[in-house]
Image (cartoon, rainbow, N blue to C red):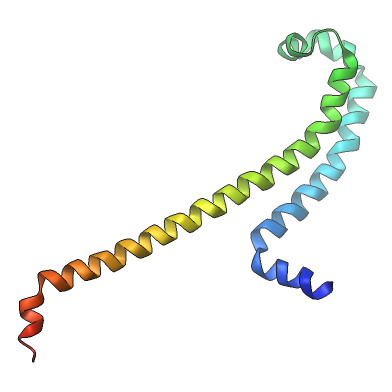
Length: 120
């Protein structure tokens, strides 16, 4: 079990760091956001500071409490998905550059075939 964890850490260091960082930050934010929403009273802040969210949620204060509680988890999952997509795109770009360099080498060899044949 420990070996497999260390293998994952060595293979995907960026994702592991992002997961640990996001988990620690959002573990702190989750109760803090809920406490802040409870202390200021969602209805008081509701009228003054977030009219666009009020239009989205309507007059349901339970919906906004649920949003505060679940947005942290969604951000963690979303950031991991975005990071995976970035890693995938990075791999495709590396593969494309590798293929471009190989094709450029083959093109230069074909262009200079007569110079290369003079070395025989």
